[in-house]
Length: 503
Ligand SMILES: Cc1cc2nc3c(=O)[nH]c(=O)nc-3n(C[C@H](O)[C@H](O)[C@H](O)COP(=O)(O)OP(=O)(O)OC[C@H]3O[C@@H](n4cnc5c(N)ncnc54)[C@H](O)[C@@H]3O)c2cc1C
Image 1 (tube, helix red, strand yellow):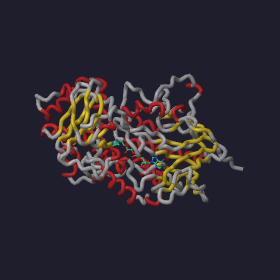
Image 2: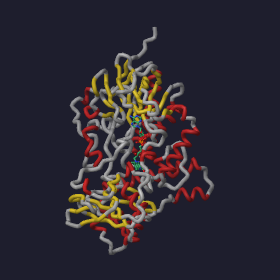
Image 3: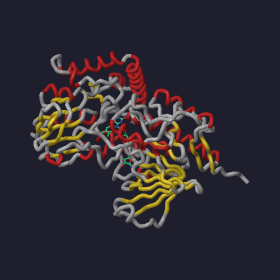
Image 4: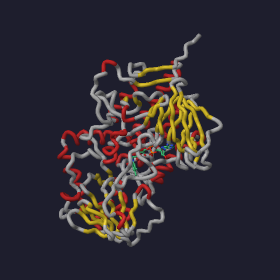
């Protein structure tokens, strides 16, 4: 049954805070609400039948993280496995967080939120959702909305329209909706794309496929390396407590990443040479690295995937996988015709071509009866938005693990909630101070700085940024970890309302 067809709910449940989603961000939000805001009632609504988000949706062969789990894991729960982890291991870790902290009772699965309506009269959100099991409409109200919906549409990935797709006699598959019955044993495969997903799928299917071609329009940077962290191994040898190991390894990784990012700005050519040298170690001097693995852009303008044990390059070196750098002219019955005139035959074509950006979880937002155009709002530090009261929205880091921001944003949101409670305020909104009223506004992120396809395609859906640190998402964990705790909640950016006056 659709949302429209569902009957009007007969009862309404109220919570102080409602969390959208039970991925790594939503489960993190639940943990922090429980531990940092005593007495606050909350619920997380999740459309899927279980927690995990990204790590449940994606079921393609080899599915794994591309950043380390010491920093992709929460700061409060040690990660004890190898740094690059399978989706299964990540979901197990999240399951432990839920069980150990008794969060299960706060999460409702199979609840798809369709509408969020803010009432300035009541200073409340009304949240409409549909239960997957019964199709029933359910309604909640909440004082504060904590958006943990991720950044892309889970139901479907992004596949460009190429001429002749309908003529292809084989199967076209998007990794995000990988058919669990797909038999690729002994088949010729082409994976279109060379991002982290392609780099995972290619070595994973190469073992069983007849051959797999990674077809890319332009090359990508990768960091191949051992799937282990030296300092973690040394500390474990010394029987150091896992909590300590987690903290020490996080600091090591974060410092290394900070220095690496800095170097990509200060000495991009040297960094590029190092990245290419690492690839050469696997592929040898004779391999055409200039064509297939040398991007034209400065390192870090797109996310760089870590390739554990260089498995992608091992697959290529073994001859089971190969790379073609060319453009698609059209699909044919037998495979692909490329712009160079070359034909690549295939039984299965995997379109690892990315995501559809979906900033608000396909929820119809209304503010006092008017539809919200999120793209018109201006962001306060990538967390709150002008014109959208009592709402925080989680968007992690591109160049560092997403979850680092989940933890530090949660500290901020919990502090804000407790501050409102202490003040007796039922409404908070961010507003650009009059001193900045002429501030230049621009797109959510500077495309010169970071420009993956899904952001470029969907930039108009994302809020605007100003030209100060407060009025932009700096993407800089290193400074945010110190700046967010110091935000003055009585600063002029925060406008409170609904304050109860004692008689
Ligand atoms: C294959 C893949 C690998 C990645 N690897 C890394 C990595 O190694 N490191 C890294 O930092 N980042 C990685 N990312 C980015 C990754 O998505 C985020 O880091 C992180 O998993 C996002 O978590 P999240 O909880 O914010 O969002 P999601 O995992 O997207 O979860 C959002 C949840 O909200 C639910 N939801 C959305 N809308 C609604 C609604 N209307 N009603 C109810 N529920 C709703 C969804 O069902 C989903 O479960 C990867 C992404 C992909 C796709």
